[in-house]
Length: 122
Image (cartoon, rainbow, N blue to C red; front, top):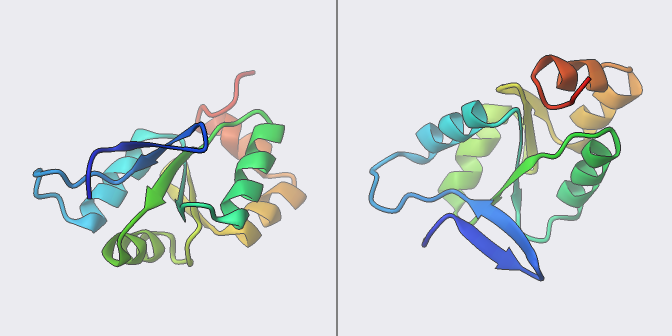
């Protein structure tokens, strides 16, 4: 796989970039989760990822979306999240997929959690 940023339909997306650094997929997933307060791992064009991004944007948070391109990347992201892809992490902790995000939102815990990890202002 090549470099870390791709442009699809006028929007930028990040990809896991193993370009010569020798970092295993599981290590890359862990590093990426630690580097951003809100991270979604998904396949390009994933409709559930789109819904997750829209919900997060509606409450004022913008997720870093990592587009997976290889089965090893999907396996690492799924294992770390204990959920299938798309997999959401907030503050380094796995939330799960769309169902986990909706559960947090409907229980009223999403916004306080996003605020706690610095993903929201105020």
